[in-house]
Structure formats: C-alpha cells, structure tokens
Image (cartoon, rainbow, N blue to C red; front, side):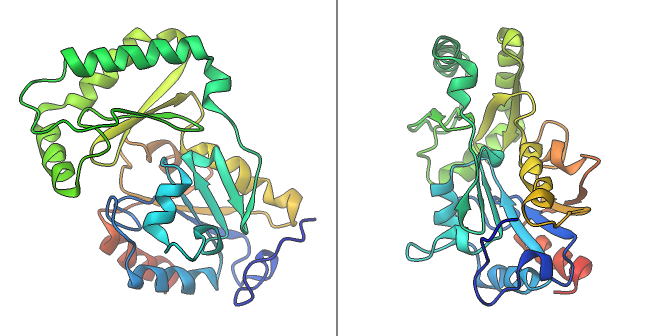
Length: 273
C-alpha cells in the first residue's frame, strides 16, 4: 500500500466521499485557454471537487507548460491535483511523486526519428501554402513521450495562434499534413492527433490520452482504491481530435466541453460544485 498522502486539507484517496470516482481534465480549452493562466474560479471549483473525489489533468504538453498554465511559480502544479499526466501520461505524478515514465525516442529509435523530423521540415517548407498568415519558430518540439509539430511554429503569440486557427479551419493544413505523414510512415505504427490551435502530436499507437488510464487503474494495487467511474472532460472529443480516444473509451464517462466556462457549468451539473 502506498503511504504518500495528499495535502492536509484533503482526505486520503481512500477516504474521499466518492472514493471510487476520479475526474480527469484536458488542459487547453477545458481548464483554461491556450497558453493562458487558469482562472481563480476554475481553481476554486477544482478544490471543491477534490474534496469529494480524486482529480487529475491529462495533457499533451510537457509538465513545464502545464505548470505555467495551472499554477504559479512558487506552487508546484503537482500539489494541486491528485494525478498529473503530462504528455498523455508518459510523464506522470501521483500526490506529488513521480510515477514510472516512458520515452518516445527509446521506442522509435534515432534513425526513425530523424526520418520523421526531416520529412516534417521539408513538408513545412514546400507544402504549407504561402498564404499562411505567419510563420514563427519551433516547428518541431521534441518531448519525452511524443513530438509536437506546428506549421506556424510554437513561438507564435496568442494573437497569431488565433489567426492561424481561423486560417487552418478554412484550409485544412493540419489535416492534410497528418494524411501525408500517415502515408509516409505507415511502417512505424504512429498515431497523429490534432489538438490545440496550432499543432498536432505524433506518438506510437496506444500512447494517446488513454495511456494515463493504466496509472489510474493501478491505484487499486497502490492504495486499494478501485476507480470504477472515470470522468473525462475535454474539448477535442471528435474523431481525429486528441481527446477522442479517451472520450469514447469504454472505461470512461466522456464529457465534451466547448471552453472553460462550459467546463464550469458541467461540473456544477455533474458534481454539484
């Protein structure tokens, strides 16, 4: 049995009123707006919910970005949630303590990764329409559990991200990019998932957001808590979106949201907080 305990204001996982329930949340457009700090209202709702059941977030970004969005520099984000699943759970924390992690590069191999990276850079240079509003920097972001690919570049400002998103909805550039990658790299068993405003993720089959569920279900062995009800809230709950797999998974109760305000509304409806 695990002896790790949550902060003093919360009961142990096995002593929560809804001990067999956990609520998991996507980050961007679910808990907060992309690259924006979470609202105080949202954090107060999550605190109230944590008093009832376990809570966690699962996002594609690395933990440093989630720290920026969900907490402040002097408070670790891993203290604000019972479970923190960065990069879909490839990097995971339980009650502030790290769980075993998995590496994208060790799975794929350096040669195959270079094939992928070189193809992406050529595609962005030669195939992305010249009508793209802006191009900035960091077109490929290497992460522990995946790579993130952005035609505009992750250094884009909030205004530039909004502009690109509207343009991409009209031109379907990310969808076309993903189709090209699926054709070129069918031998690598990779999954490509569009998320956020400006990018998409590439990761091995099965390493989507359902990956985090293995950590959730392992809680039965750690503390004796069996999570029979796993709620998931996310905005990209359509086929091809990066919330789709966990949203429609038989082990979860999926809730599609439009934005953080809608999340607040649904939390009140579902949990009465």
